[in-house]
Image 1 (cartoon, rainbow, N blue to C red):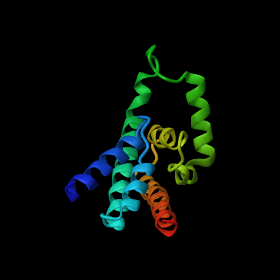
Image 2: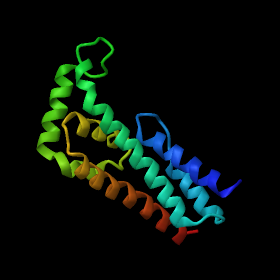
Image 3: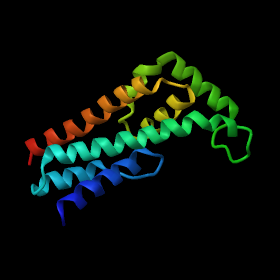
Length: 145
C-alpha cells in the first residue's frame, strides 16, 4: 500500500474515532507499528492530527447545539444538559486532559463547545491529551514488539 494512503487512512480513522462514531484507531496504529514498514513518528502524527481535528469538530458542533435543545430528537434532556454544564464548570479545562479516554472523551469535547471553552486553550489541552495517548501507545507497542 502506498505510504501516503497508510497515513491518510489512519488520519481518517482517527478523525472518525474522535467523533461520536464507534471507531477504534489505537488497534490500527499498533498494527501498523508492529508491521514496521512505516515511520512511527509519522504514524503517531497522523493519528494525533486526525483525532484532534475530530475533537475540534465536536467542539464546533457543541458551539451551536444548544439552539436545538427544544426539539424532540435532541439527544439529552434539559436536566442532563444542565448537570453536564455544572460538572464542566466545576472541572472545566482540566477535564479536557481526559479527552483521550474512551466513552467520556468525545462528549467532553462536545461539552467544551457548549460551554464556550476558548478555542486556543481547548486545542492545546486536547492536543496534549491525544498526542500523549498515541505517543505512549507507540512507545509501549515498539518496546514490547
